[in-house]
Image (tube, rainbow, N blue to C red; front, side, top):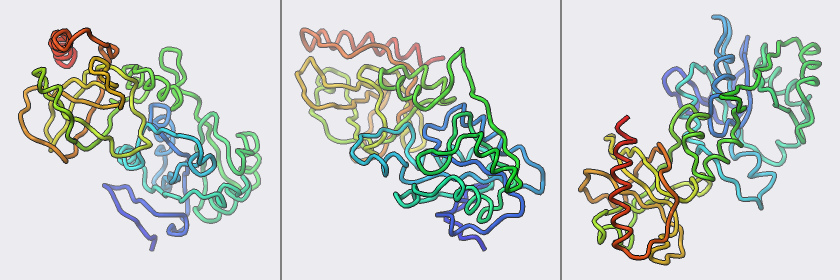
Length: 316
């Protein structure tokens, strides 16, 4: 039997290629799938268009290849790995293989990867690839080279064209760039869902409470998770399976000359003490940049206006 790491609905998830037994008729796609977005869903739709004798297989990697190949670079991801698997589970994929990515694995040639792993180990009959996908050591093989392998090793190949929304090619890079400047509306449109993060509520300095806007100070659990650019946001909040509305500030509290980045969440109509608890925040829209006000009273007046605007945004 295959060594299944765990199963979610009809999806079976495996730790490593060695835990997987060969299939008779596998339809395969492979990639990192960071920020599972509308373009990736386009690929998953093709992956799951199969007949009754076929089984769909998605191979992804942990850690992310860039973390292994460029360890000195700071890399921020749209989804944590757990979020990515959770999102994939919403589609009709039969098998997900989580392959450990190491420097040794990165040295596998495109021929070895396709012939020895996809064909001989997994049972490749049809390969689904994105428009810019490359295989093997140093991304050596383009779709042209892979097409030659397809003839040699008797499998079909289907290249999924790029997905465009309002003239923009959907990509993880464009989503990251949008998030970095706080354009969460564009990011959400390209993703197909609201960007979100999860974190722990910690003690702050009580400044928000002194202004009449008590805040939950959040430490995001995964240090590699991208945080949207500084500013004030309309957000939906999930705590203990209940949904709340709120506004969130990311920045340095310039009115009080703070030097450390903070994430402060004001949850509307909420009184509970939630220190050391986990909370999920879903971003709807950035309403303004972070501003240095002349006084706490001026800041308080602006926060009242912010709250009314956020309520209107979240009412739709």
